[in-house]
Length: 295
Image (tube, rainbow, N blue to C red; front, side, top):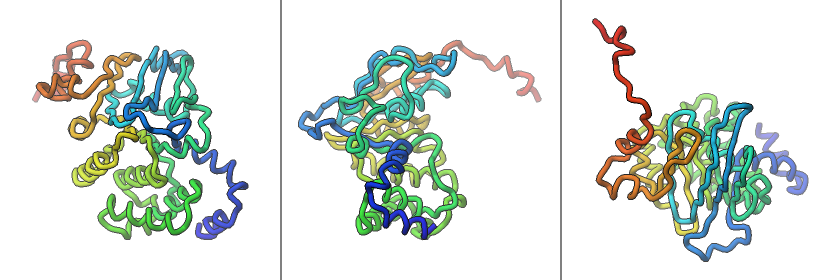
């Protein structure tokens, strides 16, 4: 593996372009099409009448959203609601069946390398190479982003020091990592190049309480008037501590997209209670499974 990394380092970056383009599709990245961020509430992501179908099944229908810089968005919904599909559409990893997805004023599927280099994504299925160590995984990602050795070494060490309790973890193969460790490594891969937009699919899944608290502290410090964070999660305790805005998907449609304060009635309702009321559908009783409850 070390020989492969050395070979990649010695290659002319021009010759690496096709491989880097593929990697950017996997680790997707993005910012303002002209580089400016003067407007503190600049629209960084916009979906207009977006519908996404897989064969005959429609997952998302006529979605209209505008996501602005400076905000942290919690993307909520039941299993299979289309949250991961929405993130993939924004990242340019999937094409809409109809409608338009724009990131930084450009079509999400045709972003330039310069635009992509401002967006970090943590997908549901982590693109980790399990024969690599944690260090090698991040080193490879950094090379694909064109980071120099000194910068890369500093960033990898600092990320491991913050997100992991034991720096020796970076010397272990990722095949030995727990689910939570892999999730943290995926997040570190998304952060390595200092993105401006973060799209995170279930970042708290499999994460222990201490690591989750550390992640929330990081996200709160990371968000600025120029940055945007979109998080899909079922962990409402963590989402409630973090987000400024809430997006709810139900029955193929976005049924709520507004501030977290308006979602919870200025804090008078718990986010979990409000979401249950919005998504519960037909009332269920325990009678259907009474056979299992009987002694």
